Image (tube, one colour):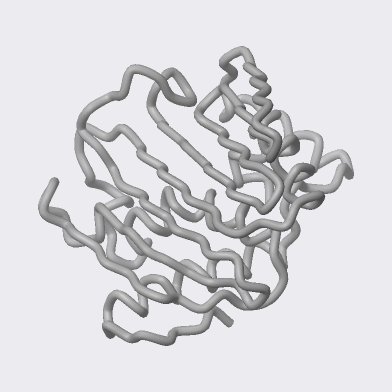
Length: 209
């Protein structure tokens, strides 16, 4: 599935390698997409709102780091900023079977932030807390803190992630494998559906299957 745009950023591979080598305690994500209006297909309730349209990218990436079906601990949403018929703001907390907690805040914003991916249209922060350190991916910069207190920073030149996505699609047509498998894409969708279901039912224990 070539549409998972975060995999086109070099920080994604850096973060994934770090997670595989560390005992992760928690992951916090803030994903904000700049939109003047929420209309057209984004406003279609069948599309699922911001958690499925925007938050799905972080859901897919984070879930690829952990095994098993996460339990949705809590979800809350709002549609009051634009007044559309879909959730425009969603905050949720999930727990993976091994114990890692995943907190996601995702929303559409009429205000463009000073820094962000794709010419500032997408502000992304992924904060990973592990027993031996912490890694923070903030737009085009990655920070790493080790348990001994040392700190390293890696900065990347801004890039057009949609252009990279299109290049990946062309490579896929020539036989190169996608960054995200079909089964992992379905898994991410199932998790997003569980997040929406928990909000709709106020359920305390909704498992993404």
